[in-house]
Image 1 (cartoon, helix red, strand yellow):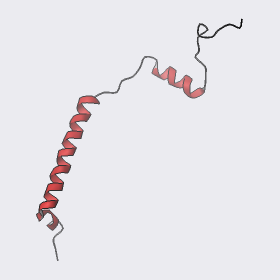
Image 2 (cartoon, rainbow, N blue to C red):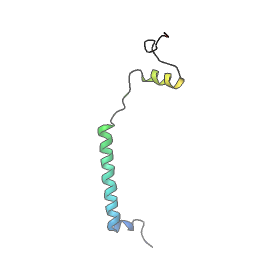
Image 3 (cartoon, rainbow, N blue to C red):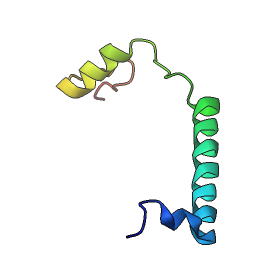
Image 4 (tube, helix red, strand yellow):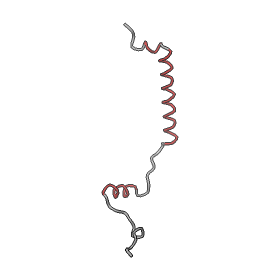
Length: 67
């Protein structure tokens, strides 16, 4: 009966494992470099609430008066 990790003796399995390890290290490095902290906009909660509840935030200057 073969042992549970006998497949690791094959060269292909070792190469695939090494490639997956390198990919994991690269992805974690990219995550720490570019995605270290979330950015929160000013009044983000207010803007999100207005957008989800359907309230219009159009300013009176943006609307034209009928001529």
